Amino acid sequence: MSLRLGVNVDHIATIRNARGGTYPDPVRAALIAMEAGADGITAHLREDRRHIRDADMRRLKDEVPLKLNFEMAVTQEMLAIAMEIAPHACCLVPENRAEITTEGGLDVVAAGNRLPDFVARLKDNGTRVSLFVDPDLRQVEMARRVGAPVIELHTGRYCEVDGEAREAELARLVEAAQAAESLGIECHAGHGLTFDTVGPVAAIPNVAELNIGHFLVAEGVMIGFGPAVAHMKRLMLDARERS
Ligand code: PXP
Image (cartoon, rainbow, N blue to C red; front, side, top):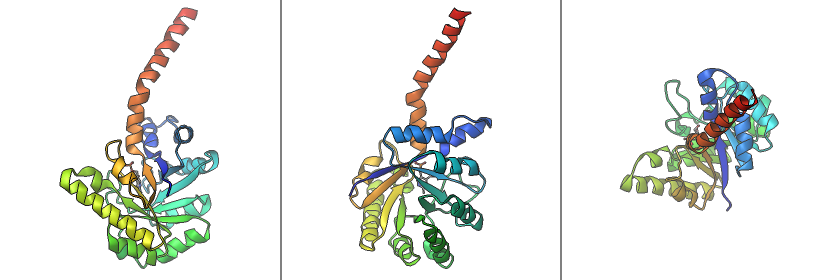
């Protein structure tokens, strides 16, 4: 099975929103990611719009020739927006206003009753639906029961811990990915992945896609900061020379 990279551009918008202007532009970042080999673009329209905004999601769909994965909470407001934008995929995530980032997977077992209709409406609109879940076999089994063709395994805990605890988390990811495949569910994974942690998750043969964002934005700043400073200096000195 091949492995796709979905690049999450949320935190390009976080930097933009810190000043309230128009740059850096998540659409431009998505096009750079595409040039660099990204297979898809992911963005999370949070209820509080702290990073990606409605207009960003529309532009990502219209201006970027890659498949868009729209992450969203299970709310009627988000359903209406996703039905209108009709992205390639929607990843349903839990959302808690006070959290810094998505802290855990969706509790499909607890949310069971609400989900079949929600998932069916998106599927009928032509969107591939995935559920962001912890690597827990009950959640994987429930995802199948509510009709989701895809799950995304939350790798946050695996990334946070070290040593034996990390090995144990990796084993849970491996087991959940195998269970998904045996149930006919496509398996994705993501959250918190870095250059140091991506290898063992990428090696899980049943995982078809990784979604990675925060680290790529952070690393992008580091790799790109020097050239940006050098370009600014060049512009300054050229202008002074011409004056
Ligand atoms: N997958 C899902 C479902 C997420 O909610 C997030 C964070 O928005 C990611 C992947 C990417 O996580 P990170 O930004 O930590 O790489």
